[in-house]
Image (cartoon, rainbow, N blue to C red; front, side):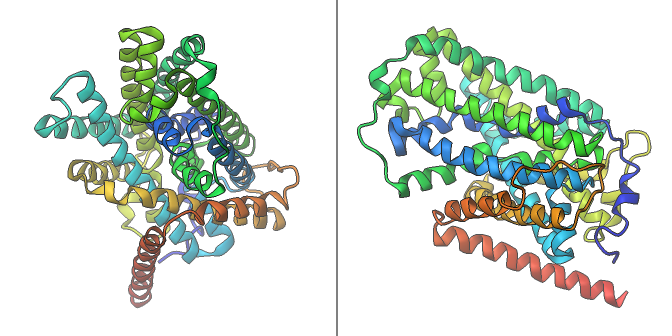
Length: 439
């Protein structure tokens, strides 16, 4: 079995570097702003009421530190695999392998979960289309379509993402612009300052709404001038996402007030109905469906590259690392991922595991934060002159501290579930190594 990373650069030369700042930033925004923003405001308001922006602030600080680490690490390691390669470069093949297990697991669960939400969103628009055989047809069709588009080439996949990103942001911006005039100041009054425990627990729920950068950076081997493109795209995307989330939450709270938690399936549509009438609610429902479709497309570009990276480094059969000479994409990895998420989406059992995605993401972020510190200390420069985060030696450790705070709000059962997954993955790794040694 080849050593991970030993032939990675050679293998990645078959890929086409065509993702620039605009395309990569759009990919990050698209994957981050999935279907969650259309539902999360009700969940956050149920826990914190008008003080909900505090949870967004905690997540914004956490992700500000995290993305700074990603920006520097991504400018120093320019191989497909993204976070997996940052961690592998510093901690070696075993920890790198585990990081990719976490990355692919959280990406796959989230991908399948949003497909289920997408079917529900369509069902709200066309009753009956999101249940039974029609639901199965929707899930199979959407994954089949986006797998086909992305298998034709990274340019086609990126173009769909850019269009979807604009399409999903328009109804949200319309909601904000009209909702501002329907807000009532009394709805924004805090009856009391929430407890730190409530803020922390709510913040860990919001991780799902902010996460996505780890998946969007997986196709790093297809990014033009990564030392310049990666940090600019990350910072641009996260500023836009944070501002959008806070404004949407405040407007929804200002319009609905104490009634916001009473609309768990469509809080923004409910607020838009008050602000703009029935047509406003319909626009937001359509916007939610478009947003989820864009997320599904973006993840079909990003997530299969984890399978490609696994196979490239000898952990999966070589067929998954094969790059089509015409389209310059790992078609086998794309179609295999599409089959897996389709089965998860059809079964629905993934919903019980959805909570694992946030815990897995935070553990991965902690590893990447430490990796960013060590990559700077070693002065690794694989993608040109690297981006250097101000106060670089301090930022990664602040990131780890904030991540530990968020993880402290997870339940014991959630942490044990993640630990069990890591344990199983470790056994498989050792089994694979023994088989390779005998070969």
